[in-house]
Amino acid sequence: MRAERLILPALALVALLFIVPAGELLSRSVSEPPGGTHHYEQFLGSASLVKILLRSAWTALVVTAVSLLLAYPVAYAAATSSKGIRTLILGTIAASLFISIVVRGYAWLAILDRNGVLNTVLDGIGLGGLKTTLVHNFAGVVIGMVQYGIPFMVLALYDSMRRFDRTLAAASANLGARPSVTFLKVYLPLTRPGIGAGCTIVFIAT
Image 1 (cartoon, helix red, strand yellow):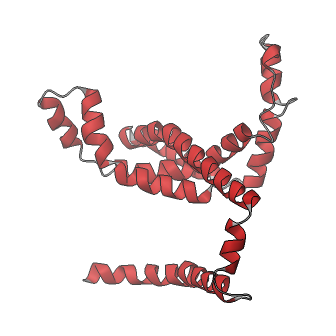
Image 2 (cartoon, rainbow, N blue to C red):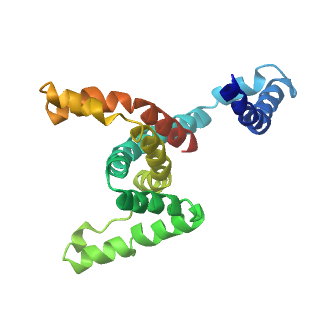
């Protein structure tokens, strides 16, 4: 009971900063003239707005999937490595969160544009025929959003992975399971809460 009381201040803060504003916004959406579901009907009746909504959802889904694929091995390395390596990985991830997203956006423009660093390197190694631009298109958006989402995904996964009981993997190995089977049937299911949390954060943020 005492532990549950400790959560109350956090719940009050969430209610104040999220639930109350969200409730106010929802209330205004159905109360402002002409009222009712008119605004929702107007939105869903616009083909261009629905197209934008679906495109945003698809982009968020792709970014979440790519972020998970890239972040999982990083989080695994942080959870299973020595203290020094773990500190280096998590420190780098945390430091990236202090860099403004505007600065990171301009950095990617400088790297991926037609006259950017990427194409300069391709020219330098004799692959100038592959010159392309990865900005102002879907690929550029995915790259930019993935680098924004990976830190959140890594931190969510790491929190779940560090709680994994290593004796379960040892027991699986002692029973004759191959490492791949242990990973798929023991490790992956038990780190699923971290996967769910990370995917939720990255999808919503995207």
